[in-house]
Each structure stands twice: as structure tokens, then as C-alpha cells.
Image 1 (cartoon, helix red, strand yellow):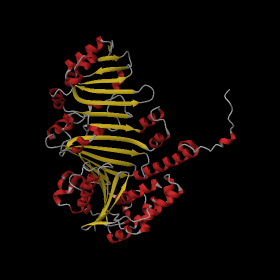
Image 2 (cartoon, helix red, strand yellow):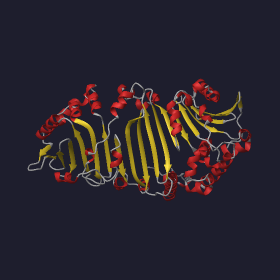
Image 3 (cartoon, one colour):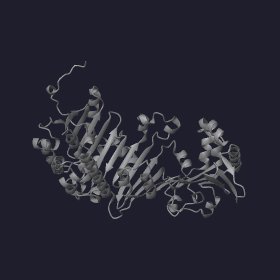
Image 4 (cartoon, helix red, strand yellow):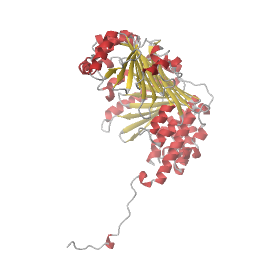
Length: 545
């Protein structure tokens, strides 16, 4: 029952996410104005669009479908009945769901629109509603602050605040610790004040980047204020030179689910102080010459371009001084010299992962003197051996594991010992047109995923299930445009005639069936079995000697 109690508190938000197709009303984002200006992140879900691309609510939360997703007969019946009650509770399912968080006060809250507040008021005070939806015998004491009604629930040191007015419902969770009652009270007051926020304290009015993200949003939008990064444990070891790029910056993610495809647009909006550096670092496109590799259909490819001015600034700022000494012992160049040799163009291609990986690496060279210095040093050390009678400048790596070929402007390394492989080198059949519009690119084809599945790394049923559906994953960035650093992601599935949401639902069902079968076949996996009672009188004590 504990599991079902917890899910009941989240069903309100889950329904608005999945049941929007129940109404044809025009979307009204009025409740977005309840999000405070100091919110650190916001997740916006256009439930109407999402449900129109997946299952209808009656089908999604039917007992039969819930059973397919791993629920027992009892759980499926209870959740389905709860769903029906919430569906008719007065919530406006045609509206967008907003989830936001504040690190101050440790608040995470969901905002839902109401289209029948009288109906909601009636339901929330009905003992039968509480018994059916929340599995509670008594209705909690309702309180009132102005036009706002609310109730509070305490569980496991967290405080749940459910509040509403004539337009919106807010479900907020406060996590500040069991003994910090005063801090929890302050956070609770902050939540209740959201129903009467003046414009200057609304995120929608205060942050133009947030407003713009919603205007351009499709199925799911995520926005984050990167100032919060300083307060996260994950950034404790990040140096100050990197942290400065996060100050007064923001991040947006816009996701769309299409037939056989998930697409996402991302954007990093730098502060005015770091704007010039972003323009400097991300204003270069990948050149066609660096894409000339000996594989026409690589299973994976990474390519990027950094402006030479940005590389020079790295040297000037001594960004790599800590690795200068170690690197010079290995290749005969300091890190600063290596950067000065490189022109910022880079491509790494993988042709096969099975057995010994087939790789090709291409680097642009802008300083031939430093290149010659590096090759002279590594040749003396025996790392490279110059190949006799070769056409052009060819070196063998470690006796023939790979070879290095240098043309006018590029250093090219590929698996194998023959330089002739580069005679047929050309831009790959896949991805080239997209790469040349980008400043960075990553592409992974299904063949690599299949090879990974056969390896020891991902040799399991779950990996194979996902791999059998995926066709290609590509991520790229056109660089700096319109005041932001942009990026895009595209995950393509093999099944082209089904929406990606339905594909993911099918994956969840398949995984649930396999997990259920595993539990049935392996009873010990479900936990420790109860021990049988032993009749102690059946055993007689015998002397040791």
C-alpha cells in the first residue's frame, strides 16, 4: 500500500501530462505567472500535444494496459479507479503543466490549471474521494489564506503543500530536514504567496530567455538558470575560469516527439560578460577536408572546429600549463606547442568496434615546424618509424598497428599499415551535409550499438531491446548564432510509422513483461523467502563427549 500512496500524490501531475486530449480548449498559460522569478528551473509539458501523439487516457490507464506495464491485478484496478476520479476532479487537462524548483527552501512544485474550481472544492472535501485516491480515511483540515485554500501533509520529514485558487492548483514539496520547522514554515509561506505575485516577481516577466523558450516550445520545454550551478555538489571541483561562464547564463531544452523520431533543440545563453568569448570559440565551421576519411559509412564519428584565435587565447591564458611538463616527455611538445601546431579542425571516425577497433583520426596542422619537431622526437623514441619507399610522408605506429600520413595541411592516422587506404579517402556518405553546417558533430549508427551489445560492455537483454529499436543518434551544434550557442539532437527509430512516444511505451511494456517473467522464474530475486519454523523439541541434545 505504501507504493500506491506515494503514486496517488503524483497522479495529479501525471494526469495533466498525459490526459490533455480530453479537451479541445485553447491552451491558456495564465498559471505560468505563479512561477516565482527566483525559480532555478522550470519543466513545461504540453499535455494536449503529448497525449495526441500517444494513447488516449482511457486506454493508457485501463486495467489491461497497466497490467502490461507490470502492475498486479490489484494495483491495476486501484490505479485505474483513482485515475477516473482524478480525471473528473475539476482539473483543466487542456492546459500546460509546469514543474519548477528552488534550491532556497528546497522546493519542488507543480502548477496545474483548474477549469471547474467548484467541482475541485467539492471533491477535495469528499471523504470518498480521499479514500479512493489517497487511501486515507479522514479529510485533512482545510485552511484558508485570502482567496487561497490549502492543506498540509507531513511525511518522512517532507512537507507537502496543496493549495489552489479559482484558476490554478499548486502541489509543492518542501524538503528541509526533520528539525528545521521554521525553515519549512518560511518555504510554505513562499508557496502560498505565489498566488498573488506582482509582475516584477514573476519569472515569465523577469526572464526574457524563459519567455522566449515557452514561445518556441513544442512538446516538452526545460529551462534552467545556471547561476544555481555554484550551489550544486557536482560543481565543487570546477575551477573559477569555467564557473564564470555559468554566471548569469541560462540553458533551454525543447523536445518534440514525431513518428519514428525524437528531436531536441538546446541553447546556452551566455551572460553579457562572456558573450565575446562565446563568439570567439564557437564561430568556426567544420571544413570538408578534415572529413576525408577512409570509411564511407563509419559507425560513429566525432568532428569539431575551434577558431585559431580561441586556441591562441588558451595559450595566452596558460590554460594548459599543468600538463606541459608531462606532455613534452611523451611527444616532444608542450601542451602550448601542441595547441599552436593545431588549427582547430578535428575528426575521429570509428569503422568497427568488434575485435581490434578500426579508427581514423584527422587533425589540421597550421605550424609545420612544430609538427616536424614532434615527429623527430617520437621517431627517436621509437614510437613512430618512417616507412621507406612510401609515397609521401608516412610513419608506422608501433610497428604497424596504424600509420600516419601527412599531406599539405592535415595529419591523418588510420588503423593498418598501408598508406594506400587514404587514396580512396573521401567525405562519408552519411552525415556530411549536416557536418559542414556545424561547429561540432557526433553521430552513432545502429551498427555500433549492435557491436556494443555483442561485447561484454552491453551484453544483456535490456540493451538488445533498445538497440533493436534505434537506428541512429546524431548531435550537432551550428555554433554561436542569435546571441546563443545552439545545439540539436535527433534519435531515429527503425519503425518510421509510429510516434516515438508509443515506441517508448512499448519498450516499457516489454521490459515490464521480462521483469515479471524473471520474478516468476527466479523467486529468490524477489527477496529473502520467509524461513520455515523449526520444531525445537524434535531435536534432542547430545553430549559433545
